[in-house]
Length: 75
Image 1 (spheres, rainbow, N blue to C red):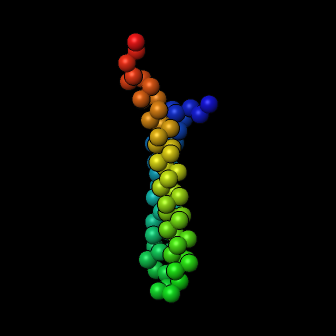
Image 2 (cartoon, rainbow, N blue to C red; image 1 turned 90 degrees about the vertical axis):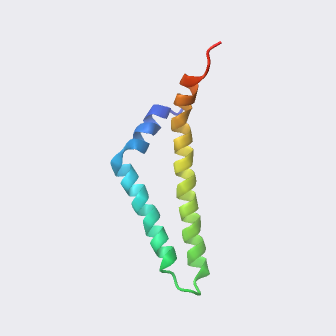
């Protein structure tokens, strides 16, 4: 089973945050600086940015599971 606390530690790590921000910015820069006629390169950049965003959202969802479980009403 995935430990939400471990994922939360990763998400809160400043080096991880910086690496993810740098990676996203690199692809945004590639997108903005692509040639007008190079739609394939822009599509690839867009897919990579979307993928990165989806991965981070999934990790945040896993990290939130512990909070949700702890705040559930116990009957």
